[in-house]
Length: 75
Image (cartoon, rainbow, N blue to C red):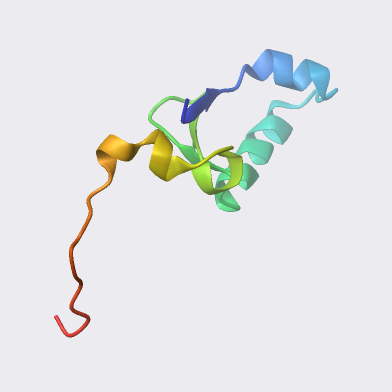
């Protein structure tokens, strides 16, 4: 999948975080440095496939690839 849902309570418990503000700053930092991207939902984030995709994206999404015969750099 290309998204992740972070369970706030579980995350805070496992990392011994007591402050909600610390959790919020941690997620903001992950977004700021490009590991995640925000969505319209507070606990759901898009993941950066350049960092987290294991495999060949061209083979995985072959139906999404457009092959261009030639490319003119002057245009």
